[in-house]
Image (cartoon, rainbow, N blue to C red):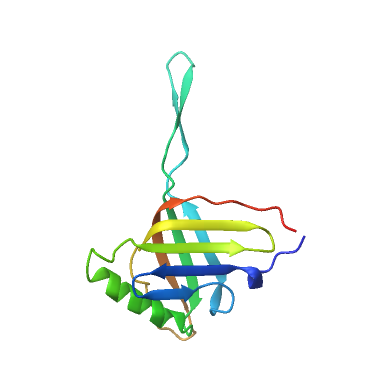
Length: 146
């Protein structure tokens, strides 16, 4: 089995546009990451050594898209952020999906909002722009490849 970021397809669809954020978008080496915001389980232990598991319903995630400073997608994300943050009518309406058709990975994230505008650094060397998003719901499936 072989992995390559070149096979990663990522899309952001919402008020103000549809952007391709995967391979070919001047992604930084650090790429795209998705992290669940809460543990799925909480273990509560009693004084006598017995315990109980609590299954949590949350599917909230944080998605971080990392682009080179020179990526034209920074302008597209900036414009979408400006439009969406202007009114609650547009906020949290995005769908962000990361897939790899070669490995069969599929990570759809729904009700996605920008966490904040990217932090910026101007320095001697070019830098990366990290765009953080949060999603109310993600239902990932990791594949086994072809």
